[in-house]
Image 1 (tube, rainbow, N blue to C red):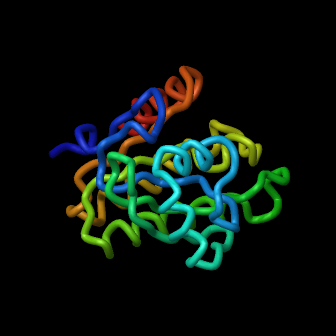
Image 2: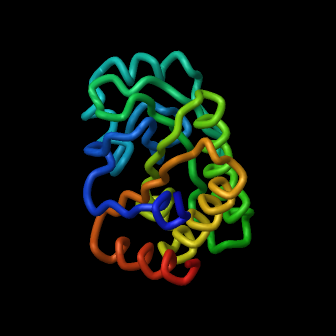
Length: 173
């Protein structure tokens, strides 16, 4: 498979995707919230919240994995992105870590496909352009180093995000 075949864009809810794992842009409690986090918890059902309670939270830049329950995705990788504070508080490093840790968990679980939202680009205020650039670079890096990863999907919440990811993928390829 070519790199272009292994990187896809989806316009719509990440909860609709039939992949091995979807990534939840979670908060540190892992107990649900707004945006993508709330949508995933609602779609997965109450069992997801129960499993998340047992995980004891998650630090910014880290990730933890649970079952997908009522989702089409078999697993949910919960990662906590940084809140944007102007770019001088290690936000880029923390966001890169979210992607790297998510890929580590995907590989460790012997899964082959993953979908990401635009981590931190919603309520956490990270500039979409910058967040998407990190997402694409980290995904290309993971695909280059791990042939077991067959598909990475960028789930875009609106046409603006879709256009940003399309432009970045065109730039990289």
